Amino acid sequence: MTPQKILCPPHAVALVVCTLVFSCERQVPTPVDDISSRALRIHDRVLTLDTHVDIPFEFASDSVDPGIRGPYRVDLPKMDEGGLDALFWIVYVRQTEARDEEANTAAKRAAMIKFDAIHRAVESMYPDRVELAYTVDDVERIHAAGKHVAAIGIENGFVIGRDLSLVDRYHELGARYITLAHGGHNDICDSATPRSWDEGDAEHGGVSPFGAQVIAAMNRVGIMVDVSHISKQSMLDAVRLSRAPVIASHSGARALADHPRNLDDEQLLALSEQGGVLQNVAFSGYV
Image 1: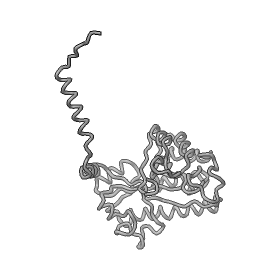
Image 2 (image 1 turned 30 degrees about the vertical axis):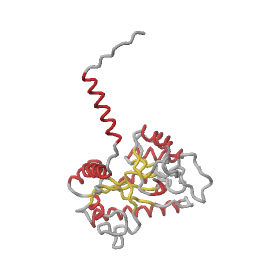
Image 3 (image 1 turned 90 degrees about the horizontal axis):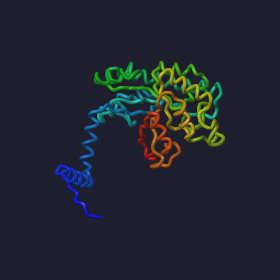
Image 4 (image 1 turned 180 degrees about the horizontal axis):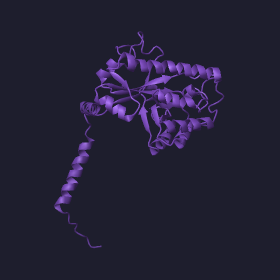
């Protein structure tokens, strides 16, 4: 074969040189200070949101005042200092072994205590500093007014019991996401962390028929489906059943921390393909 002379125009040479320089520059470690500066610039530019802030039953009282710097990780002074614009205060009620009418009534009563506390915090105690958002427009309006944005999430669909009308009631009170289960199975779906009284890892094999009705009701009124804490099959079922993208309000990647409540690669891909979002949990055991 006769050797061929390859002609390389000047702009091609320049492109190769630039590419090599760029490639070499990328190998140089970025100083930590530069990363921190970039992170702070992003933080200052965007609306920052914590999607899961637990509260005790004594919240919005003299003993747990959200307007005073206290022992909890999040309060209004810490939000000011850290530049946190918005949060979801959480109506969490623990799972009990009993799931009869009496237990369901008690769970609903406990949920209402926390709903009342959140409304008291924003409506009576600190209306000039924080406001409850019911819509995306509310979020933008409140933020533009210079106040912190509060939203409400429910952790553990146990508070619904077997009463689908409570989905509407909780929506009226401001709930904008519901974590389908917590520690222990409930009537909606299986948990990623069964309790000692649960008979095995799966009671329903994922989302129950009643749970499918709950998800449909949540889609109808505009409450996001939260898949944190639920079993893998429950999570995949929720992605399949929900007509709106689901969220994982406080989960981690199982490839990095092998905990049953974290999401593995199959789950993360399913979440992404459905348009959902995972908010990484800031807890050492899950990261």
